[in-house]
Image 1 (cartoon, rainbow, N blue to C red):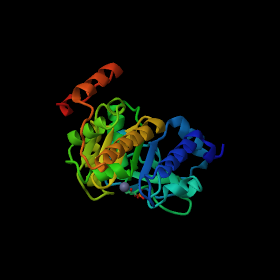
Image 2: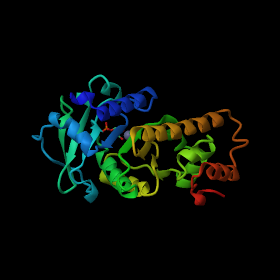
Image 3: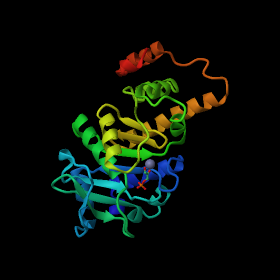
Image 4: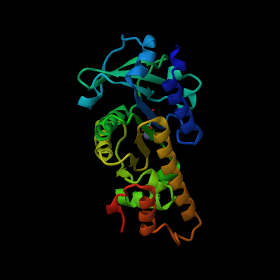
Length: 273
Ligand code: 13P
Ligand code: ZN
């Protein structure tokens, strides 16, 4: 099978394009990684080469040794992924020590995996541990309304979680654990990777102040759906504020508790009054 016909590669490409179409990925903004299942690696293996050098990441994870990830390329544009996947995405293998990657497929015109690979890698590591291996996707996007809120709301997990829960009735059902917030930090390095992965021990989503959002999930649909739901809630809040009269009424904490009860989810109680 041609690697571009392998279902997981097609699904990865589709998600990149969905994000582009929703306006989350100006220029090279945002990045996506997926931890492959052994059977998916087997379907792609004929296209792999093992002649590229190992590159150290500056972070390490015991539980990701020898894994394979599909990743967007650093500086590559999401809008081009669908046109030439082989030049804009890649598959990397992780070494025996769990501290380096090497490209085994893709980025045929040169390049490296996303500069946020250390953050993705550490987030994968904590989500794999927290979900017993169920989580496979880490997605970073430059979601405009959520970024706007990082200029006007206090940068706390509680404030962001409450505003987002209150902004659309489905939100407490989609992310009952709320969202974490990372203060502004220099992107691309080990420090922001460690700060984000610390939050990902508890949250499926982490806001990066004045930058964007990281979401995690078991598959492309759930992870993209989480990004979309959070950004839409942020957009509703921005629109409500834009009417210029402040927030007159909202979903009360008892309303939130009632939704949680009926839908059988556990809301993070410390975020409620
Ligand atoms: P990359 O092009 O290296 O993926 O970086 C984009 C980005 O969003 C950085 O946070
Ligand atoms: Zn970014």
